[in-house]
Length: 223
Image 1 (tube, rainbow, N blue to C red):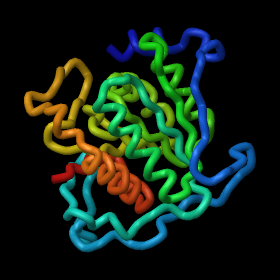
Image 2 (cartoon, rainbow, N blue to C red):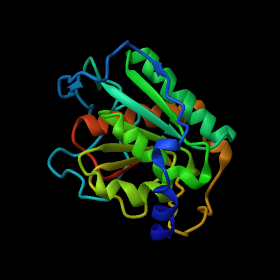
Image 3 (cartoon, rainbow, N blue to C red):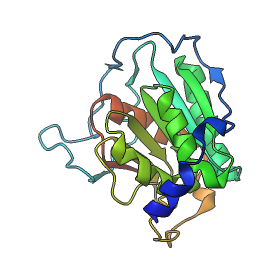
Image 4 (cartoon, rainbow, N blue to C red):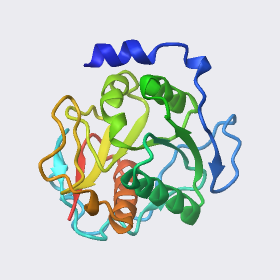
Protein backbone atom coordinates (compact mmCIF):
# COMPACT_ATOMS: atom_id res chain seq x y z
CA UNK A 1 0.00 0.00 0.00
CA UNK A 2 2.63 2.53 1.07
CA UNK A 3 5.01 1.79 -1.82
CA UNK A 4 2.22 2.21 -4.40
CA UNK A 5 1.16 5.52 -2.87
CA UNK A 6 4.74 6.79 -2.76
CA UNK A 7 5.31 5.94 -6.42
CA UNK A 8 2.11 7.70 -7.42
CA UNK A 9 2.88 10.77 -5.38
CA UNK A 10 6.40 11.50 -6.60
CA UNK A 11 5.40 12.37 -10.17
CA UNK A 12 6.19 15.98 -11.03
CA UNK A 13 5.23 17.74 -7.83
CA UNK A 14 6.04 21.05 -9.48
CA UNK A 15 3.28 20.48 -12.03
CA UNK A 16 0.59 19.92 -9.43
CA UNK A 17 -2.08 22.57 -9.32
CA UNK A 18 -2.54 23.43 -5.67
CA UNK A 19 -5.14 25.89 -4.49
CA UNK A 20 -3.59 28.08 -1.82
CA UNK A 21 -5.58 30.86 -0.25
CA UNK A 22 -5.12 32.92 2.87
CA UNK A 23 -7.49 33.96 5.63
CA UNK A 24 -7.11 35.07 9.20
CA UNK A 25 -4.52 37.73 9.97
CA UNK A 26 -2.17 38.82 7.14
CA UNK A 27 1.29 37.27 7.44
CA UNK A 28 4.33 37.08 5.18
CA UNK A 29 5.23 33.41 5.42
CA UNK A 30 8.57 34.03 3.76
CA UNK A 31 9.81 35.62 6.99
CA UNK A 32 10.75 33.73 10.20
CA UNK A 33 8.47 34.03 13.19
CA UNK A 34 8.51 33.18 16.86
CA UNK A 35 7.98 29.61 17.95
CA UNK A 36 4.27 29.15 18.72
CA UNK A 37 3.13 28.61 22.26
CA UNK A 38 -0.20 28.08 24.00
CA UNK A 39 -2.02 31.08 25.37
CA UNK A 40 -3.98 29.90 28.40
CA UNK A 41 -3.96 26.50 30.06
CA UNK A 42 -5.75 23.20 29.65
CA UNK A 43 -8.61 22.72 32.07
CA UNK A 44 -9.05 19.86 34.53
CA UNK A 45 -9.87 16.58 32.87
CA UNK A 46 -7.98 17.02 29.61
CA UNK A 47 -5.21 14.71 30.79
CA UNK A 48 -3.84 13.54 34.10
CA UNK A 49 -0.65 15.61 34.57
CA UNK A 50 0.78 12.90 36.79
CA UNK A 51 0.34 10.28 34.06
CA UNK A 52 0.64 11.88 30.60
CA UNK A 53 -0.50 9.75 27.67
CA UNK A 54 1.97 7.37 26.07
CA UNK A 55 2.64 7.39 22.31
CA UNK A 56 -0.37 6.20 20.24
CA UNK A 57 -2.59 6.35 23.34
CA UNK A 58 -6.22 7.40 23.13
CA UNK A 59 -7.49 10.01 25.57
CA UNK A 60 -11.04 11.17 26.24
CA UNK A 61 -10.79 14.69 27.64
CA UNK A 62 -13.59 16.27 29.61
CA UNK A 63 -15.83 18.39 27.37
CA UNK A 64 -14.61 21.97 27.18
CA UNK A 65 -11.33 21.28 28.99
CA UNK A 66 -9.56 22.72 25.94
CA UNK A 67 -11.58 25.94 25.73
CA UNK A 68 -9.05 28.05 27.63
CA UNK A 69 -6.24 27.46 25.13
CA UNK A 70 -5.54 29.29 21.90
CA UNK A 71 -2.39 29.77 19.81
CA UNK A 72 0.00 32.65 20.31
CA UNK A 73 -0.08 35.43 17.70
CA UNK A 74 1.47 34.53 14.35
CA UNK A 75 0.38 30.86 14.36
CA UNK A 76 0.65 29.49 10.82
CA UNK A 77 -1.62 26.65 9.68
CA UNK A 78 -2.10 24.83 6.39
CA UNK A 79 -5.47 23.16 5.95
CA UNK A 80 -4.94 20.14 3.69
CA UNK A 81 -8.22 18.83 2.33
CA UNK A 82 -9.35 16.13 -0.10
CA UNK A 83 -12.91 15.32 -1.11
CA UNK A 84 -16.09 17.30 -1.59
CA UNK A 85 -18.45 15.15 0.46
CA UNK A 86 -20.61 16.87 3.08
CA UNK A 87 -18.57 15.43 5.94
CA UNK A 88 -15.29 16.84 4.64
CA UNK A 89 -16.93 20.19 3.93
CA UNK A 90 -18.13 20.31 7.55
CA UNK A 91 -14.57 19.78 8.80
CA UNK A 92 -13.18 22.39 6.42
CA UNK A 93 -15.77 24.93 7.55
CA UNK A 94 -14.87 24.29 11.18
CA UNK A 95 -11.19 24.98 10.52
CA UNK A 96 -11.78 28.16 8.51
CA UNK A 97 -14.23 29.48 11.10
CA UNK A 98 -11.74 28.77 13.91
CA UNK A 99 -9.00 30.54 11.95
CA UNK A 100 -11.16 33.61 11.52
CA UNK A 101 -12.17 33.69 15.18
CA UNK A 102 -8.60 33.29 16.42
CA UNK A 103 -6.97 35.37 13.66
CA UNK A 104 -4.86 32.44 12.53
CA UNK A 105 -2.70 32.79 9.44
CA UNK A 106 -4.27 30.05 7.31
CA UNK A 107 -3.48 28.68 3.88
CA UNK A 108 -5.51 25.99 2.16
CA UNK A 109 -4.15 23.22 -0.06
CA UNK A 110 -6.89 21.37 -1.92
CA UNK A 111 -5.79 17.89 -3.00
CA UNK A 112 -8.20 17.44 -5.88
CA UNK A 113 -6.23 14.85 -7.88
CA UNK A 114 -6.52 11.36 -6.31
CA UNK A 115 -3.28 10.13 -7.90
CA UNK A 116 -1.27 13.05 -6.55
CA UNK A 117 -2.20 13.11 -2.86
CA UNK A 118 1.34 12.63 -1.63
CA UNK A 119 2.59 15.46 -3.79
CA UNK A 120 -0.09 17.71 -2.31
CA UNK A 121 0.96 16.75 1.23
CA UNK A 122 4.57 17.60 0.41
CA UNK A 123 3.39 20.91 -1.04
CA UNK A 124 1.63 21.68 2.26
CA UNK A 125 4.78 20.86 4.23
CA UNK A 126 6.92 23.01 1.96
CA UNK A 127 4.83 26.05 2.86
CA UNK A 128 6.49 25.86 6.29
CA UNK A 129 3.48 25.95 8.63
CA UNK A 130 3.47 25.40 12.36
CA UNK A 131 0.71 22.85 11.85
CA UNK A 132 -0.86 20.94 8.97
CA UNK A 133 -4.52 20.11 9.60
CA UNK A 134 -5.93 17.28 7.48
CA UNK A 135 -9.60 16.93 6.54
CA UNK A 136 -10.79 14.05 4.34
CA UNK A 137 -10.48 10.28 4.68
CA UNK A 138 -8.66 9.99 1.33
CA UNK A 139 -5.61 11.59 2.94
CA UNK A 140 -5.14 9.01 5.70
CA UNK A 141 -3.05 6.45 3.79
CA UNK A 142 -0.91 9.07 1.99
CA UNK A 143 -0.25 10.77 5.32
CA UNK A 144 0.97 7.45 6.72
CA UNK A 145 3.57 7.43 3.94
CA UNK A 146 4.79 10.99 4.34
CA UNK A 147 4.56 11.92 8.02
CA UNK A 148 7.21 9.52 9.31
CA UNK A 149 9.76 11.22 7.04
CA UNK A 150 8.91 14.71 8.28
CA UNK A 151 9.11 14.38 12.06
CA UNK A 152 9.74 18.10 12.52
CA UNK A 153 6.33 18.93 11.04
CA UNK A 154 3.25 18.66 13.27
CA UNK A 155 0.03 17.24 11.83
CA UNK A 156 -3.53 17.17 13.14
CA UNK A 157 -5.97 14.73 11.52
CA UNK A 158 -9.65 15.54 11.95
CA UNK A 159 -12.40 12.92 11.93
CA UNK A 160 -9.94 10.07 11.27
CA UNK A 161 -6.63 8.67 12.50
CA UNK A 162 -3.52 6.90 11.29
CA UNK A 163 -3.22 3.23 12.17
CA UNK A 164 0.38 3.67 13.39
CA UNK A 165 1.01 7.38 13.97
CA UNK A 166 4.43 8.81 14.67
CA UNK A 167 4.94 11.37 17.43
CA UNK A 168 4.20 14.27 15.09
CA UNK A 169 0.70 13.08 14.15
CA UNK A 170 -2.24 13.81 16.44
CA UNK A 171 -5.84 12.86 15.67
CA UNK A 172 -9.11 14.27 16.95
CA UNK A 173 -12.23 12.24 16.29
CA UNK A 174 -15.21 10.58 17.91
CA UNK A 175 -17.35 7.47 17.67
CA UNK A 176 -18.78 7.51 14.17
CA UNK A 177 -15.77 9.30 12.68
CA UNK A 178 -12.58 7.29 13.16
CA UNK A 179 -11.47 6.03 9.72
CA UNK A 180 -7.99 4.45 9.97
CA UNK A 181 -6.98 3.48 6.43
CA UNK A 182 -4.22 0.86 5.90
CA UNK A 183 -6.75 -1.43 4.20
CA UNK A 184 -8.74 -1.70 7.42
CA UNK A 185 -11.88 -0.43 5.71
CA UNK A 186 -14.49 1.81 7.18
CA UNK A 187 -15.22 1.37 10.86
CA UNK A 188 -18.41 -0.54 11.58
CA UNK A 189 -19.44 2.40 13.75
CA UNK A 190 -18.98 4.96 10.96
CA UNK A 191 -21.89 7.37 10.93
CA UNK A 192 -21.82 10.35 8.54
CA UNK A 193 -24.53 12.02 10.62
CA UNK A 194 -22.10 12.15 13.58
CA UNK A 195 -19.90 14.65 11.74
CA UNK A 196 -21.68 17.76 12.90
CA UNK A 197 -20.45 21.37 12.96
CA UNK A 198 -20.36 21.22 16.76
CA UNK A 199 -18.19 18.09 16.89
CA UNK A 200 -15.94 19.37 14.11
CA UNK A 201 -15.41 22.68 15.92
CA UNK A 202 -14.59 20.86 19.17
CA UNK A 203 -12.15 18.57 17.35
CA UNK A 204 -10.25 21.53 15.91
CA UNK A 205 -9.93 23.32 19.24
CA UNK A 206 -9.14 20.20 21.28
CA UNK A 207 -6.62 18.99 18.74
CA UNK A 208 -4.81 22.31 18.45
CA UNK A 209 -4.76 22.73 22.23
CA UNK A 210 -3.18 19.30 22.56
CA UNK A 211 -0.51 20.02 19.94
CA UNK A 212 0.33 23.38 21.49
CA UNK A 213 0.86 21.68 24.84
CA UNK A 214 3.17 19.03 23.41
CA UNK A 215 0.63 16.21 23.72
CA UNK A 216 1.18 14.76 20.26
CA UNK A 217 1.19 11.36 18.61
CA UNK A 218 -2.10 10.48 20.34
CA UNK A 219 -5.77 10.15 19.50
CA UNK A 220 -8.17 12.58 21.15
CA UNK A 221 -11.55 10.87 21.31
CA UNK A 222 -14.40 13.29 21.91
CA UNK A 223 -17.68 12.26 23.55
